[in-house]
Structure formats: C-alpha cells, structure tokens
Image (cartoon, rainbow, N blue to C red; front, side, top):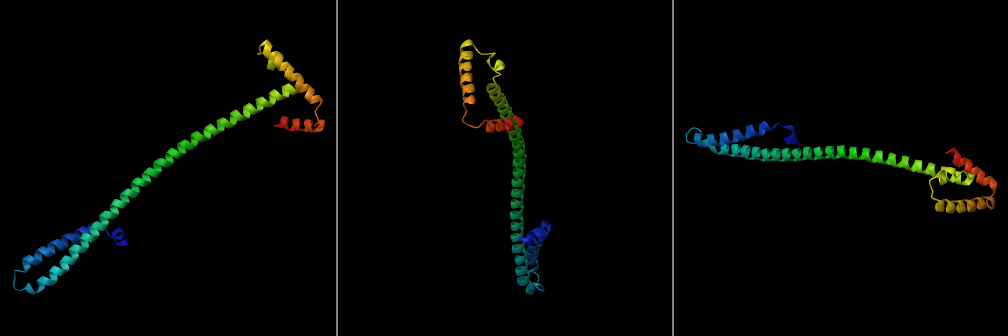
Length: 167
C-alpha cells in the first residue's frame, strides 16, 4: 500500500491522538449550550479520523512486519550464498586435485604401456617376486608376438604412438 510507505508513521499516531482528543473534547464541549449544535458533526468527523488512523496504523504495523520478514530472509540468503561460495571453492579444489591425479595416473599408464611395448621392463620387474616376474615375462612375450603379428598396418600403430607421445 503506497500511502503507508509514502507517509511517515508519526503522522498516523498524530491523527489517532487528534481523533481521541477531538472525540473526548466533543463530549465535554457538548455540555455547553452554544456548541451543542456542532457536537454531532464533530463526533462523526473525529470518529472517522480515529477509525481511519487506526486502520492506517494497522496497515503500517503489518507493512513493518513484512519488511522485517524480508530483511530476515535476505540475511538467510546472504548466509546461504556465503556457504555456497565456500562449498564451491572446496568442490573446485577437489575437482582440480582429482583431475591432476587422473592425469598423473594416465601418464603413468602410458609410460607403463610404452615400456612394455619397447621391452624396457627393468623398472617394472625390479620389485616383483620371482613367481610374479615369470608370469610377467610370459605375458610380455605374448605382447611382443602380438605386436609382430599385428593385423593392423604398422604405419597406423606408429602414427597412434606419435600422437600419444605428444600428449
């Protein structure tokens, strides 16, 4: 309601007091014979002022209550935005770390495969037990035979390896 927002609250309190004072004065002045003819119109006018100011005071009170509720909710939204920003930063850090770990693991896997393909397995087998080493050497021999007998043209394999090496 624009009138409640536009006019100051003290104006409604002042009109309320004027209404109460005028209504009270109309009862006192009504005892005087000269003013008797003005008592009824004065009572009607001051009653209307009193009712109107009471209605506007109620509207102002309701408006203030809603404005307070808006301020509370704005504060909650501000706090939620701060928490959201903190959580987003944590998530961003975790994603960066996870991406870094995935990239490192991928690079290690590529190095491992390249060592297998080239036959450079000294580092791979150095920490293996004798039984594990024998199994690994058998698998490596199978891999070398598969590479030699590969039905994929050699040029495609070499080009693929060049691309992998560039990463």
